[in-house]
Image (cartoon, rainbow, N blue to C red; front, side, top):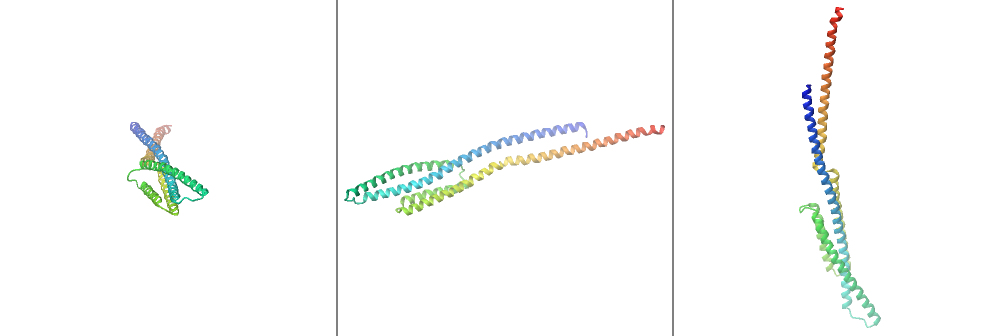
Length: 247
């Protein structure tokens, strides 16, 4: 192979390798930033979902307590006061206790309701408007809030407890959905972005092609060198034969 042509080819090959490495480096840097963003998103989504689920469970408990204390308080207030002084004292203590529990549960309920809507707003901001993975959580949220209204209207304690368990069961399903979402996101982080995977495949194939080209050049150079060596040896032998005859 001509030395000038070989030099030009190797120079072009070196330029191609440099350009390919620059592209790979650029894509890898972008993928690294995207991965960091996804990890931050995962952590933020996990915290927001945990806050929402915890607030819903707490709200169900405080609503049940509020309804129970309120009905007990009204029952005591509507009942006829006993004639016995001791019984009056017990009744008054029961009224004060239920009144205190009612105020505490109502305050807790208001605080939990604020936390619920705040956490729900944070969760919504983590997803696109047409994200199907969030729609299941949204449906369970609406279901839980509807059950809370049923609990407030329920007159029997047994029914309220049953509704409370239904809410806890729904939040358990929300936890399952949340784990699935976070796991899928983590798998994406672990495997890499599509652009990164394409660049990785391109890099592997580019390396294979370049190694093949270099190997081909090496084989060609070796064959050419061997041919030249054989020609030189034949020329030397042909030059030595007349001398032998002359002797």
